[in-house]
Image 1 (cartoon, rainbow, N blue to C red):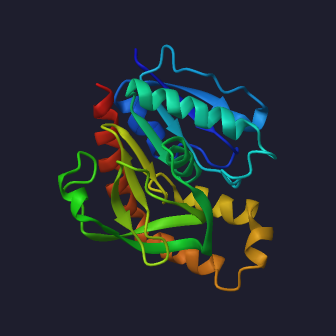
Image 2: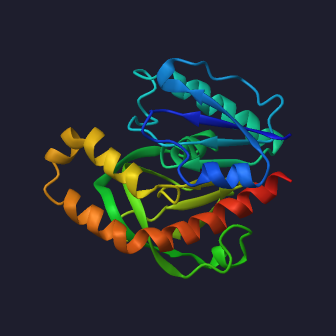
Length: 234
């Protein structure tokens, strides 16, 4: 059975709908839980793909979070070996850094339901071809990144121009969250309530209400993208 290594930074940010899709395709997932101080390996020996999940820390905070350097090193080795990588939110930022791009704070936090638009390059991409040119996704981030040299930009939003990047043949960084469930969103609103207190523009009740309206479509897009990513492993 092929194995996928999953790097999880905080307990509340798990695989979401990705877990069922992985099992459906017959893959095994091994979790590396950074919040339990589990060490990042230097190489991906024995694994067929890498999934790096989100988290509240910034890639530029490697002095406070030394594991960030180890993750960047691991992703660099994975890129050299052309092993499929999926980075979500913080994972996308780590992929960008590993590929040589800058990661930094954005001008404003993007939390809630926002529209993203696909670029022309997405129309021929193996993961995003056939998706609507514009659709609504769930966001929770304040950081952003530049597009690495030689990489492709596949999606953008009004506030953050770089939402999805493709690095090489099989490494993808997705800034938004296709994996979330309504229960995950509710948990994030509780876990991060202190952060939300300082953001007058973020209305938790509206986020939950908008979730009822958008979650089914989001899961449709998510299943399409994730299923296609898993086929890259084969």
